Image 1 (spheres, rainbow, N blue to C red):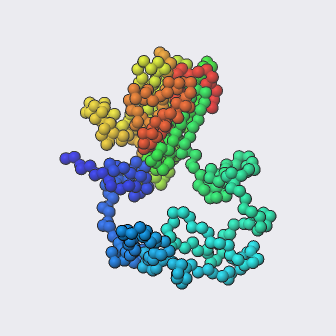
Image 2 (tube, one colour):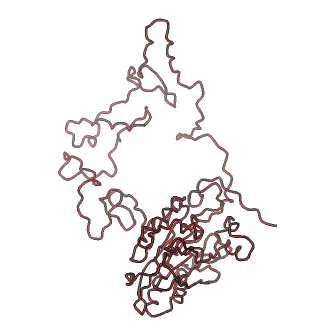
Image 3 (cartoon, rainbow, N blue to C red):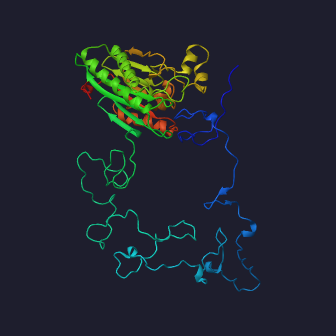
Length: 483
């Protein structure tokens, strides 16, 4: 008997991590929280006011008695005009609103009893009250504080009589110290080690929210997307020379497993480890396909090292998993194209001559791919299933068994290689769909092409982190040189 599937949630945000949800979501895409376990929302109750009393809808008797306009008569005398000051009314608490004819209801002007209110003002005259911002409701008082600010701002240099300086964001700012990072908000303060501005306190954008890198023969772009609270993807691009002096260009793309702990650290560690392993092995004459295999093994060891002794594993703690990620890499030489992967990130081949057929060069380690390989479903049925993106292979201490896939190709014509996470291919799944969105000049402008592809995913909804690397084939000779 098949177990009943959880029903779609009606929540707007995940109760565990506050990630925005869609109506059909059964699990949180950010933390993997099972939304079917969320209890039904309580019945609506009356809003509790600040004083603790229940405030319901106002009764009809409490409504304002607006004066009726006189109906025009047969004479030519116009009806009287009612001014705003002629209309009496009450606020939501039942008290009469201020009226110019009743001074007891007007705002009281307080004398300057405290000397701290009149510093810099020998006459003891308080400045006028601040103007009420437009759009604020009438009847709201903007009282000045009766006590001085607990943390007063230091007076500007030159004494209290000096005018307030211009906005530092538009002023002529001095050059920051070498290596200092300026705040993106005020453009004046320096950013501390915790990522906050020392001047205005503004939290700075995380570096990984959007990353770009371009070398002569490869470019990559990674973006947080529009739905996730952080970017759990990572990439590494570089180039080196083989023993015969011919170029070799590399691109590694990793996608953190959101349901695992610290997926962003896993993807970063894996991409760096794989890249370093390839740069070390290729100049020594290691066959490119063997080098790719060993690079994936090195990436796996780097991710395994992130799992500390306190990392719970197994069925008794399913919500606490070891850090994990997927990996896909491509290596381009003057004659060979090597691809390696574990997981569901992909590599596509798009020929420069668009009359030739494009191709997907990887097979997903996923539930959907297994169903298709076993002949139980066709590809359309499998990828339409809600279990389609459940991966069956990944890097991490809790992985069942590491089985790196490596394939070697010898393209007979020039083209571009697209290495990407599912944040992109979810919006261009087939090779033909991917070829349609790759710019025609991608080989000459790989960074522009990568930006276009990321933009396509964001325009489609940006439901996931998206990372893509674009590499022309064959590797141009100017691509040689480690980076």
